[in-house]
Length: 149
Length: 320
Image (cartoon, rainbow over all chains, first blue to last red; front, top):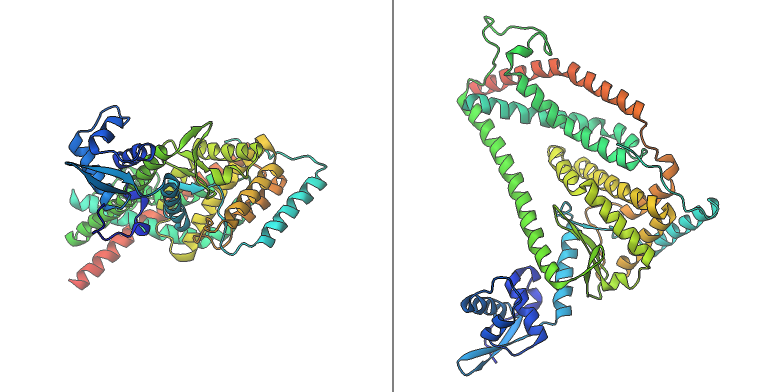
């Protein structure tokens, strides 16, 4: 196992991963300790990449600390160091970070924005308002008028 | 040719900026109206209101170069010895400056948009590979509660296991109907145009306008969902999802907004009786009034643009 590299996986952004890299990770999550040739054979792609392309992708994954490797004969055997759930959580974290600043609002938007100053009591009073509405409307849920344009 | 394009670019940008600042001063009056009518109409009116400075500026600048407009849309007038009516910036530096500023503006906007698009596309591909298709959305197998829409032409809804486990079937249907309404209304395009149109509105006023546009789009989609599920159910779903996101260690807080849109959206839904659509006859009257105002504004704007050219040339000569 190679431990002579400087790694700080917590600082790595999930978006550093390309399509082929993610597919290689998928293969390794399903079946760890494979070499580049075996990973290439298991890739589900319409156009299978060349062995050197797969090797380059694995090298990048290794540098980004998403996989580690052990030398076995002439080839490296690769295994993932990040679980699928952890990677997904990291990707979600980045999406949430982008939702925070609102700069990508035309491409990425949340169903609800919760302001930082909103507390439990504000949410409670909103629920109370809805209950009051249901009571006063006699259980009728109410549908708004359709604006036609 | 450079002189003509340069003059047009500089005058258009200056008229656009000037009109946008004037419209920004009047905005509090319009804001009261758009936030009280049906959000579908409110969001459209707001977009048209902010499109007006750019479009009117464009029209007035174009008319500088159309001599046939003289006497029709613009009162007949002469320049100097009544030569052909094409006022151009005679100082080359000004014309080139106008061209460069307009070019830079287009490049910056394009770069910004393409950067967002590339980032969104890359995220989209990653999430597509890491998620499963479910009817109407992509399922993220993660504990963290999250629900968001990602993409430009055909945006997809992503919902995490963390959120899905806390939502009922009815609440999920509300979320999907709301997001489907965004897609049908092309809200991402509206918001993008809104950002471009309010480019020259500075500071807090600009942020307020963009927030209002965003809020009205969200409210319009809430109303669409309420048409299928009822206002109380949609309001309950909003509060429920807000609470789930809020209670998570890394909630989706929005720093871009001074107050929560959640509160405003729930209030709008519960007061849906007062958010009436604009009747067709009133829409017709509004269109007639706006068209008349546009025609009446062209003459002063034309002469204003000519004065602007004269002032710019005077200043350029003084500086040189």
